[in-house]
Image 1 (cartoon, one colour):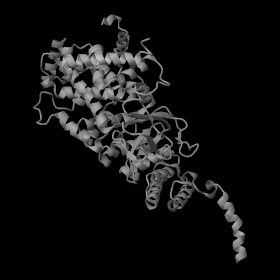
Image 2: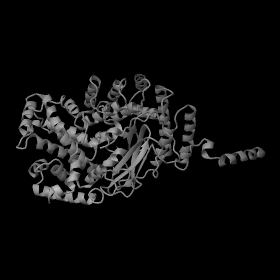
Image 3: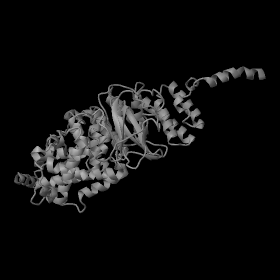
Image 4: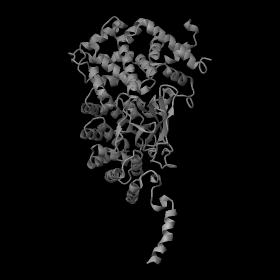
Length: 184
Length: 216
Length: 180
């Protein structure tokens, strides 16, 4: 194989483009480490990352690294819209707003739907679409600013909250997750 | 007597023929909320509307209970409790508060904030939006931060923070927790960083807030 | 360059904490690119990257061996990305994303997300993780197979096979759209 003639080289060149991640990274890292003991200090008997790992698995701290992302769904720049009313029962309520994607990885599911404050908790209003691979289900919903509780329902019977999103209030014995869309 | 009874019959039949909303019923509850609960919920909604409260959160709560198969009594109790909380939050946030702000406020209440805390938040935020600030109170508590600490943090940021700052703050606290800090310590450190200096992770300073940062 | 890394590393270990910022600045772009291409999500990548630098700082005294700081911190990042993927698999992650994330999410169709880069990013995400990892380290990060072994703990022969399969799979995935 002669790499120079391989059309994949053009693909690789694109993949080599800068990622352009946050310019604040160095500041963020230094802010973190300034409150840590010096790396040359006596090590603890339990490796730091193992202690962190234990915490990571605690349900209440399921707001892991990905969990921060659920938070970042929060949208800006949508000025002053109030919740709209459903055009008809069960339809996603927001007729305009931040497009928010709900994703569930459930390889063995035959059907997945999301129910929540944005669709009258309707089991039929917002079915997720299945991707071809990886057992991934997704749906995109426009949400106007507000705090929405939601849950996934798999195969019409199995309720699933989001371990990576903040927990929302529940009084009926089936836990919720919550997403907040900012701007109002 | 019998004539009088028959005299009401046409009115009764007319009422039965009216659509639910004309009879003071919330149409979205029909066929979903059990009859045993629906009458009471409708009454709560009518009274709430008369008091100037938003009914959307109450309808949502009833529908949530219905979808989750809650017993009628539990469903009514949940709607009643939320109605009571909305009253508290509306009094704290003021009559002009949006439905989203009121709803987020009820979450903060349930997480441990007091009515006085919400009044304080309203005061510190002046005319700025409250939805995210109140939501962050609740989310921090859900992440394991003690309620009084979470409330204190949100209030400490209230004078200057915008929604993006609150979101960055919450995200950083979550990250610290994941990295091994106790929730209380994570919060204390982040508050110090946010109040002593401009939070470097703020989308305002990075130019990467909200959806703007997410496009590769 | 490796020696220079070592000098900075020793200064940090001797108490000059702020010097660590130079190491972060030196490696952030390359590591960030790998994290973004590997995870397909900007926020995940930033989280993994920050986590990696902090973990590296904590463990800096254990950074030894002929490869020096570079391959060592690559190894931490690779593990962070693997952990992320494993965690998703274990918990069958449920995530919330903005619409923008669709561009880097493996989806059945590309409706509404035309564009060369989006197509390439999606194809990359459709590779099995171990193939994507090997492909990126070899062709995007330009590591030698020896360094890749240090970073991944996988034998060079296996890595070569993964790279080969990744290239083959990418050709198939992109044959009708990009490589025509």
